[in-house]
Each structure stands twice: as C-alpha cells, then as structure tokens.
Image (cartoon, rainbow over the protein chains, first blue to last red):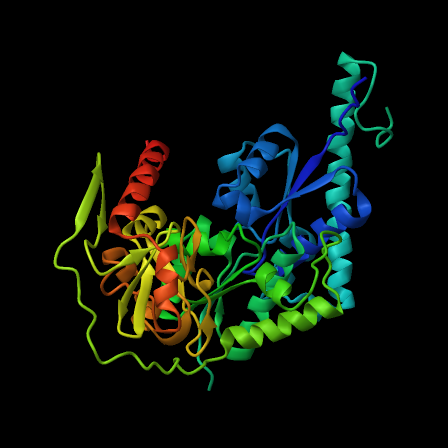
Length: 157
Length: 288
C-alpha cells in the first residue's frame, strides 16, 4: 500500500539584506521549519528560486505557499507569483512590527535582541495562523473527495 | 580608511552555508563601511544597486556550489573583484556544516568572522618572475569548424591534455593555459583564481580555476614544476582568455622539473585534434 504524502506548505521568505524586516522574516520562517510546524513546512530558497531553481519553482507551483515579506517591496510574493503562480497567503512583516522597525538596516543574527525575538515570535505566530488555515481548508477539500485526510492530525477534521 | 566594496552574498535560506554567506557579508560591510547588495531585490529591481555594484570592487559570497550570487553577477555583467564559496571554505577549515537546524553556533560564527577578514584583506599582488624571453605566438591556427562553432588549435610548439589544457615550453620554463574549447564551453569568463607563485605543482595537479556564469573550470596542470609567474592581467581582465587563450589568455609560467619524462603523457596537436573533434560533436549536440 502506498503511503499517503503529508501536505507540505512552502514558506517563501524575503532574503532580507535590504532591511531588518527581512532578517525577522528569515528567523520567523526558520522557526516554522525548526519548531512550530517542522513536518509540514518547506522553505524555498529565494535566491535559488530566482536564479532558475526548477525544483523550487515546481514545488511552489504544485503546493500552497505563504510569502513572508520584510517590507512592502514584497520581493518574495512578487517573485513567487512571477515564476510559480499565485501565493496562497502573504504576510507583510512591516504591517506586524511597524515600518520603522522593519525598515532599519539589515540585522546580523549576532545582534538579535529580546525585542527582536518578540518580533520574530509575533511574525511566526501569524505565519502559523495562516498556515493552519490553509491546512484546514485543504483538509475540508480532501475530505469531500476521499475518506482520508493528508494532514494526519494537524487539523480538526 | 579601509577600502570600500560592494558585497553580494547568496543569502540562501535553506542551508547553513547560505546563513553563513549572509553573516560574512554583513561582517565585511561592518568592517569596511561597504555597501551590501540584496540578491533578491537586485533581481527584482536593478536601479537601486547597479551604480553601487559598478562603482565599487565587487565581493561575492556564495553559500554552495549552486553559485547563485556568482550567476547573478554574471547576468548583470558585473566584474567580480574577489569571491569565496562558504562550503569550500568550511571544508578547508575542517568544519562540517549542519544540514538542520540552520542556526549558526559558536564555531560557525567564528568561521564567519575569519572569512569576513579574509574577504576584505588586501594582499599584495604576487611577485612574478616572468621570463624576459617572449614566448613565440602562433602565426596561424588549425581551425576545426562544426556549423557555427570554430575551435582554434596552435599548429606547433604546444602540447595538450585530455582535459583541454595546454603547455608551451621554452628551455626549462613553460607557460600553461586552457584551450579554445574550454573558453567556448564556459562562455564569458568572469573570474580567475591563479595558482600561488612559488608553489610546486605535480603533473595533472590543480593550477588555479576559471569561472563563468555557467561553471567553474579547474585547470589541470599538464606538467610538473614550480610556479614562477601568473598572468596578473587576468585578475582584472579574465576576458583575455575568451579573446585568445593561447596568447594574452595564458594562465601561469612554471619552472619545469621533469618535462622530458612527462611529454609521454601529453598529446601532440594531431592527437588533441582528434579528441577535440569528438568533444565538439557532443558539444554541438548539446548546443542544438
């Protein structure tokens, strides 16, 4: 019997060299992958995606994606939609932590303060909320067409 | 006041090496007051970084062998002043990079600091002792043509390896370089890493690398010897290799140690021409 694949959601983070919001995006995305939803999160390497990485582009075409952008230039969202199709959801870090904080110069991980960590947690919580919504929606659609759900207990179905 | 650069890291998110590339770039900028280029935003919008990248010496930090930052520099037509690849450097320093989690720990951060220092350190140009005698330049070339592609080979005075490198000897000295096939396969060469002057290289050992947006080519030294000079013109104008790899595009000069014995392992013009024809047939198929 074939094992059913778990639904994977791609979190496409801004690469973050232009502002601190980018660093917050990266750290929040990493938190999703390492701690919050490790089994269902896939990160997409944005520089590779832009350089023509076919695996990344195919994944983003076939699976739901959440774009996490540091500022309103929205590089992650724009790039994903240009090469792979519409994102399922988008987060603008500057909306969550404020433009003044997001638009400060790029941050090194050596200089992360408690205040930055709070911002990371705040953004990660919003990614998780949107992540779970997408997962639940997918489960509802799946349960309409089959008796099994691919989330394996990650939703309320 | 230290020299100011434009620093272009790969910034990859899904590997530890990409995280390190970002850290190295930030440290290099802090140390020198240089400008950081965001590889993602640079692709999305040229205007912000074009001037910075063209007016300052460009330092490129790639995380892995995918070389996204180098490829971006090639696409933008930028000349790379200096570059490093984190995975290669980690290997040289005996550091095993974690696959996951991606967090940088003490060891990785210490290496980032060391590599950032190395990246911005200005070393003196290697002291050459190039021979005063002029190497005879080929008067004409054997040209092998296949459809729109033409490949040159000097008709005499050169020996070759199967890996498309050449040697031209003159007494107990020799020049080495790559063949026309290599430069055409790589297309626009954008970076040259020379062998170190004074080092001893064995026959078929590595003698520097050349790099284009497509690939990195490791030069296989056709002969054993001590490196006495490198073609420093290539450091600022690697395109000389594209113009003519047998003349101004030579790579290095060596003091030969056992050329008589080693000639048996090299190819003469006819032998190399036969190999070239086979390679060109495949090259041609791949190019169609």
